[in-house]
Image 1 (cartoon, rainbow, N blue to C red):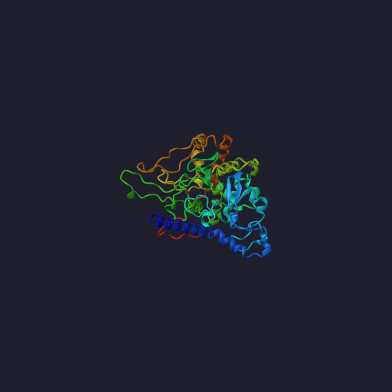
Image 2 (image 1 turned 90 degrees about the horizontal axis):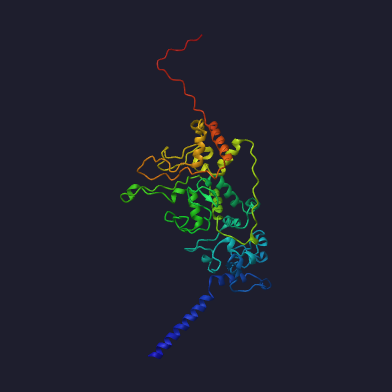
Length: 413
């Protein structure tokens, strides 16, 4: 009996060994390699061999096996039209050799994996999926300090940075030591865990990854945080309001550009030998105090809450003033004789702001304190600009002449 059991276990072990050998010779990467090598002439195969290709970049703490399938990535003369057998476009590999930079440091994905889905990061719980198409431009910011110098190669990244400034995102979000803390700090939003950036995937269809979450949030901020109706809440709990982030009406191209910029905000710290340091930006020259004030208004993101040129229209749930952030076009009328009161409001903010209904939650947006962020010289310029906004007010339409019924006809002279 023992001998039969021993023989059965030996046969099972041998079967498992054969199965493991078969699986090892029928992996995805072996199929891709055989398919590529079959397309080459014997003289073209010189220097090429099978097996797993591995690049170790200790300075960047990376181990990449991408070239196991992408065999022609640095050999344009052998490249085919279909992936994964194409060559890398442009001259990027001349500037970023694979043996020095690897692949995942720029393209994302999972360097140690050899199955297609896992290598591209298209699997659950992997937070660095492959950056496809223009999204790969997000990686340039790791090493290149002045983005304008690489605009020809990373136009979406540069456009996204400009949009971030133009839409006033700094008014609510901080990056490093600049901006406000009304909402999330975005300093490392491109690499923070999903829990830290409060990525709520319940309101969006899979796949659930950082890229698609950014794009959905920018498309319609309140789709991912639609709020809770009072009748759905247990007794005694307050209503939850939707996201206070405005819908900026961004086009698909603008959403992609902003997503590229947000993805570029990572914690990555490459060695100094990899980095092109940023040069200080030139000091702007203004022709008037109002022009300087407009630059202060735009640089600090005031438009995010108060609207472009202070025209308002941003929704603020349960705020005392019509449920909106107040516009600034009438600042001169309210503070024309009380300039110091206006300056004090800007310096110290208004936190919290009055509620329209005291029984409901506080408004999400509030006036933050700008003392220490805006100098007194900038504050004077900002006030001059705010006062100038009243000149843009459209005059009220002329009232039509009243109609008097049964009026006598006009007499001619």
